[in-house]
Image: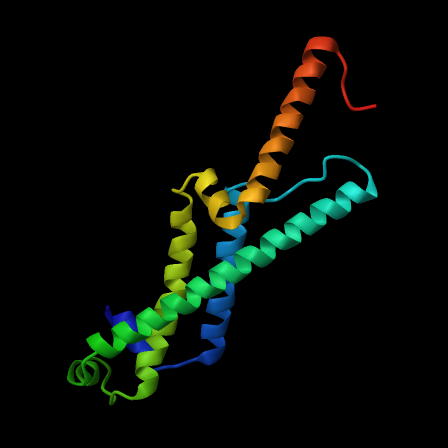
Length: 168
């Protein structure tokens, strides 16, 4: 840990930590949706198509939210256990000029979990879209999406070859 993290540990500002938590989780979910193209667009102008797209998007957001929250809590627990193991009271007191209390374990663990979540969002850009979809969607949903893509490809080919564009 560097001096910044040590200094943050002695100034537990819960409001900022909550904002950092919410911001990092929202950033992670948003980045996954945008980077892996998980947002579903309505295939037609009908109210049913728009409703279906809204439901798919809502289920994507809920699924990713649950996954990211579970991972965040897991990361927070690992960070807390690591802090309990690694932070030495004497070193802490010499760096911060204050005694080591329970909050000093909690605050850096919480702070680092938020920073690591932002790093994870950026790092997820290195994963393939297929890997992210596999993690976000069930097997059945993946098959449904593949069928829709193939159907769209067939419609585009028919339009190009025969001049038949759109469905009757």
